[in-house]
Image (cartoon, rainbow, N blue to C red; front, side):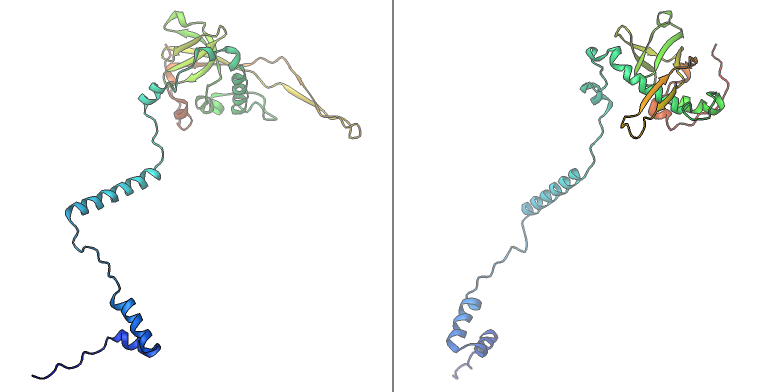
Length: 250
């Protein structure tokens, strides 16, 4: 029986022998190649591992979605439960809302072009009707002049809440009244802007400007608002286009 041919040397050992001495080549081949551990992962994971991997993937995907999602708006029930629309009785003071009424007067004067120079102060339905019906009435001082309920006639106060079907007003006696718009006529006034005179001091004296406000005694503009034709939220009125039509108020 003949001897088996000599085993062919490993290609890595041959390459190391070209660069290093025989002892160094043999040592590196033994440590780094021959005895190097080989880490393997199972090629066929179990069904439980697959379920766990899918579960972690769903959790990471859901976490990413929630992190980049916009806050969900509150529902009407949540708003009522948290008291978002509640007006504390201790804060319903007529004196607290006088500043709001002053701001509203300036807002209405701008809408009606009363502060524009050269204007005669003439307000007509054709020129300003669309602006009036689209205006915001938070801060307006309304007075009930006609109503199906006689007990509401004469109520007067500053509007602190304008909803679709009601006006919430604070009277001079610091009472919060909720007045339905249906079958109710409201009256409000917009005073004309007063004349302003400004005097400037001399440049060498170093004095500040002095401003004087002189009332000319003109009567304010008086409007009547028919609540049955005004049952719209302020945010909806701002973008709504109104059409002229004849309405029977009897």
